[in-house]
Length: 108
Length: 117
Image 1 (cartoon, chains in turn red, orange):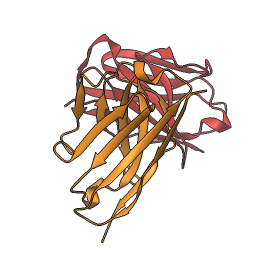
Image 2 (cartoon, each protein chain N blue to C red):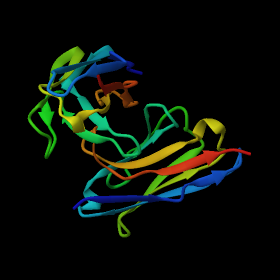
Image 3 (tube, rainbow over the protein chains, first blue to last red):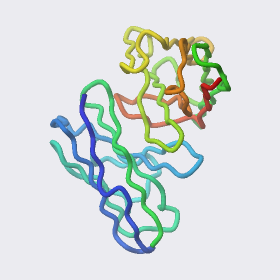
Image 4 (cartoon, rainbow over the protein chains, first blue to last red):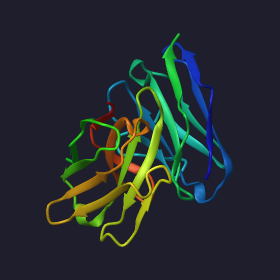
């Protein structure tokens, strides 16, 4: 199976700062079949990005995704107070679909 | 508005069984593949099972293969997960989610399954 490794495990930022989250795949994820989700405590995950760089419906444009092959990035251009949460990447290139272990974005 | 509402979770003894349900509304259920995804307490997300819109394609994670059965009733707009031979490792919040070609665009609120004696 494809193993996704997210870094860093925790990102401490102040509101207004830029966030850069990484997701590395153990094998190439062709066709950019990679998604990003945001999860807040006690809530279900919310889709942010699909196909590596396409924003889901209603997602603000401060969220952007990039990358291909084995290296993918989620960028939050200016972190808002509501963005402090855990972020997961997921590949859907090859079954079984797998998720990264998550990056927690916390208030500095 | 898309709504997915899971039910059927609870406390069950090791070796026991449980059936989860997911009631869908706000979209054309019979045109969507559906997934079950779980999250153990304090842990990350794990894909469990998928079923295509017409039940032609069904997939399971190795961790549940042979013990869990996914099914759906398109007339009732409902998704199910029959879970047998449960162990402590199955303790998790179970989410149903719509499958848009592999990624999950809508999620339910989840139902907690606790396996403990």
